[in-house]
Structure formats: structure tokens, C-alpha cells
Image (cartoon, rainbow, N blue to C red; front, side):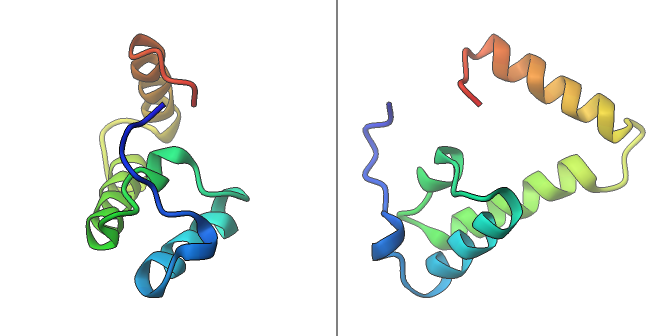
Length: 81
């Protein structure tokens, strides 16, 4: 569990509310990996852009290979997601 204060959906305003809404449209909820960045929505937005470019942008790796690497890293880090 994170010790970083996270903004709840009901308290999100402006850019953060927009980012939370977009996350819910994509995944049905706001995962904690995003919520933990909620204190700084501008950084959260850039983090999402980095993720999208890494996972969906041009690469010599296929999307399946990138997903597989993400799973292996998450498992190695004992992540729940």
C-alpha cells in the first residue's frame, strides 16, 4: 500500500478529473498506478503518454512481446497488477 496521498474520484478537478474519466473509459476504473500520481496531474498525463508510446508506438518488438515483458517485470517486482 502506498504512503502517498492519493486524490479520490469525487475530489478530482480540472485536468485530473479529465484524466480519471479517460482512465475509466479505457479500463473501467482508475488503477492505483495512475491514482498514485494524482497529486500532480501534469506528470500523470506525461506518464500516460510515455506508457502509450512504449506499449503502442513504433518498435522492433510486437505488442505481444511488450506485454509479455511488462508481465515479467511486474511479476519480478511482486506487483498486484
